[in-house]
Image (cartoon, rainbow, N blue to C red; front, side, top):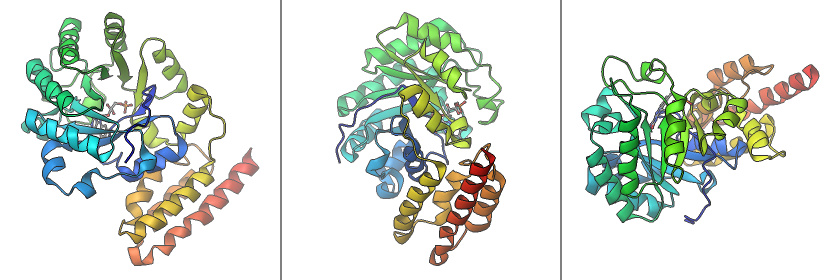
Length: 334
Ligand SMILES: Cc1cc2nc3c(=O)[nH]c(=O)nc-3n(C[C@H](O)[C@H](O)[C@H](O)COP(=O)(O)O)c2cc1C
């Protein structure tokens, strides 16, 4: 597979477990050719010993694409970096931001912020194992540590090991006392900390993440950072990518929602023949009509029909009926 796809990290969609799987990424790509995409986090052991086709395969349409990995074993991380390169991924990203108990037990994610030397060794072994960029996604602090010098030293140690791009979720991680969901909302956002990291390290690529939903906010952040990563708001309202294409990348000929569904149904047809379940693809489209006339009907239609058994998958084709009805409703309401 061609691994020389150009990478532009001005806007990226955040890695999200149970959300940004290969079907979701294919769907998102129908609306944006320019954003950078990330896989869900894959543990090193799964990537090495698991069913590689199931866990790591992707369609070439998804590129440019980064594999996000979770781990802290240098040898395993190096092996996964090489696997990622060989499979045609454009970047390998290490997760240093997930605070979940399970992830901590396996010694990866945000708890690694406590061990900058170990992280630097991990980065070094990945950099030496592949030619694709090795990047890191982390938080601005953990527990009672939310300190510029600590974060800056952490980043500089990773820089010295060979990483040049850092994605900073602008809130600290609480390693105990908060659920993963609370950890995405309760610690306060501190964008200034990220801006300051960029200011003090002008040669590093600094991507800001956390709580960003509007194009106006994206534009503001781009005055201080190299890129913006967005997670939940794109998953909830995927068609907002079209606005991003227009406002940030000056692309005007984006597809309508109906054209997106048409293309996705072609993909669905092919995938179902290969054994994929209808709902594994269509579940990612629940938010496609977010804020539109017919949004409720779309959601109801999906929940009534997307559990169609594979043998019965022709039912999914009826999704087009509601798409066309929505199109008419939207035209008359404009
Ligand atoms: C459902 C869900 C799953 C997530 N899974 C991951 C993950 O696998 N790896 C990771 O680095 N971050 C993960 N995150 C965190 C996001 O990448 C992102 O940092 C966070 O949601 C903040 O960005 P947002 O406010 O734009 O959503 C997840 C977030 C959510 C909501």
